[in-house]
Length: 205
Image (cartoon, rainbow, N blue to C red; front, side):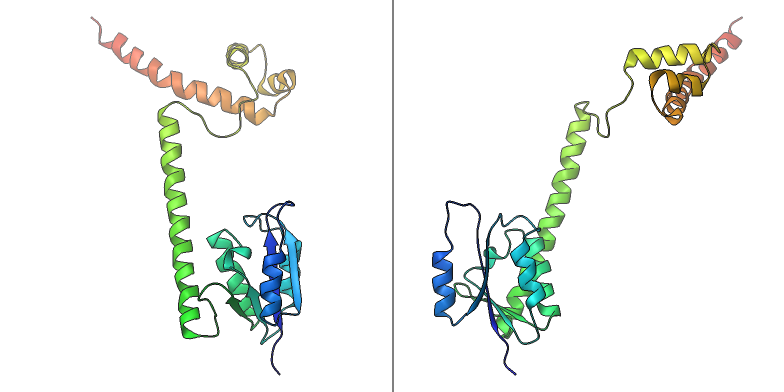
């Protein structure tokens, strides 16, 4: 039994229209079309997912251009894999993409290669950006719940025995593990220095 031609049309903003896409899809014999207004970079598009859920074996997803499905290469590959998993095919009306042909299948694989390259480049740029930011003194992670003055007060009072770690945690409204980290970091910084000072004192005549 031959499959159904299933169309998908998308524009990004309300001041745009899908008329051109709908006319092209209708001219290609598509009778059922899912359309919506949403950014092509978003994955959470209701009509896109309804279309993918509707697909049956032998169906052909028809689009005006493949970027109507997604502007993200990674998401586009994911969508194409979902279409293939349902036994359906993909066809673009304005591009040489028809996954029912060897050339179209090769194009799909090429898109997958470029998607992998895009992800690798993104990771490389992210790591380079983090490294450069750290070199400039930028700190990553959640901001500290304690100010520097509060940390110094905790170190002084806990070290002197005026407060326990649990009491300091209640006083400053933080988790006891936060207090433990403050004390541990302080000791890690001071013990080596004190040890070196003792060595120096021990070598003096």
